[in-house]
Amino acid sequence: MAVRTVLRMGEPLLLQPALPITAFNTPELHALIADMQDTMQSMDGAGIAAPQIGVSLQVVIFGQKEVDGRSNPRYPDAEEVPYTVLINPVLTPVGSAMEEGWEGCLSVPGMRGIVPRYERLQYTGFDTYGNTIDRLVSGFHARVVQHECDHLIGVLYPMRIKNLKDFGFTDVLFPNQDIQDD
Image 1 (cartoon, rainbow, N blue to C red):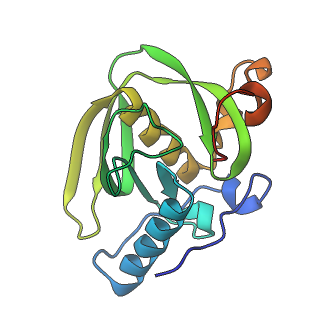
Image 2 (image 1 turned 60 degrees about the horizontal axis):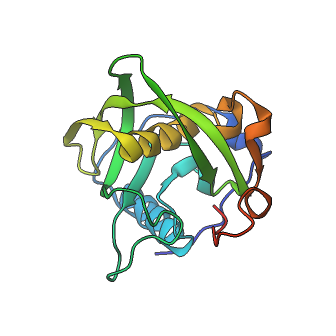
Image 3 (image 1 turned 135 degrees about the horizontal axis):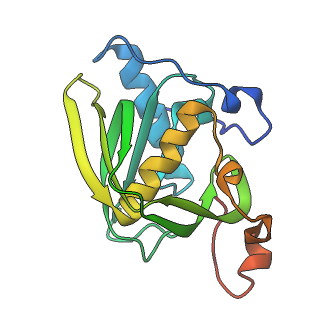
């Protein structure tokens, strides 16, 4: 449909809780998801949330897989995550084990930070048609889901960084690597 402008950190809408979806399989919902997908793909994103394109609804999409025979240039070493549309998500940590890892965000371009996330997670919600989704995940998949769902509660990843020494500009943190903006 259309590549939309991604709101950047500082925009008030990114700090607001998003509203739940009440009607599934509508032309409006399909159009929103198509715009999110076009925007995410145009920026080589691993995920995007509706609030990032200015729509305060509980919709996230994510997926890390090869496209046209190439891996995502922003996450070339990450395991594959199935393309998913997740609506009205509920996240439940499985255990208390946390894992720290580098994250970036389309709404915080040019920066990365070390963020603690639950290692294992169960998430539930709905797809575009109102069918139930219920998955138990770990690793990069769990990290991506937690990151994207944070957008639905008004949280950006820098708010989760424990030590600001672990936050900075990508080109300064990784000077000899070709890591693209998020």
